Length: 145
Image (cartoon, rainbow, N blue to C red; front, side, top):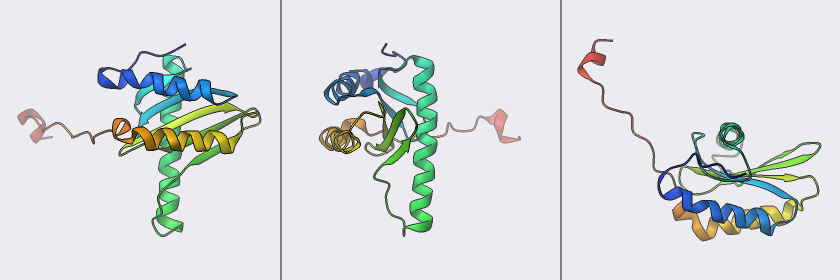
């Protein structure tokens, strides 16, 4: 159930996400995404689910970042946790311009999963980073509009 929506060197990061999911009991899936919500690597989600999760995780992380700016003197976001009746969703920074989202059942040990996510990010942060996308230059046809 692994999505193959990515291209380029990020596909080789799937095994890191798979290792995290398999190492931490009750973890269901993991997703590496760009901060603007594009799927970079995934384990345990179908393509549509991964794209939806990437959009959700990006939005949640953005809201948390805004809260840090407004209410915590610009503090960085360490982790966002959504506690649902049957699941836990964790979103954390994963390098410059990237986030890691992990979905687990309620039986997961939140402290262990949070720790394992932090250790994964710390060990491979440069590989998780996403360079900022640049806007395409305007064409002569666009200049007058």
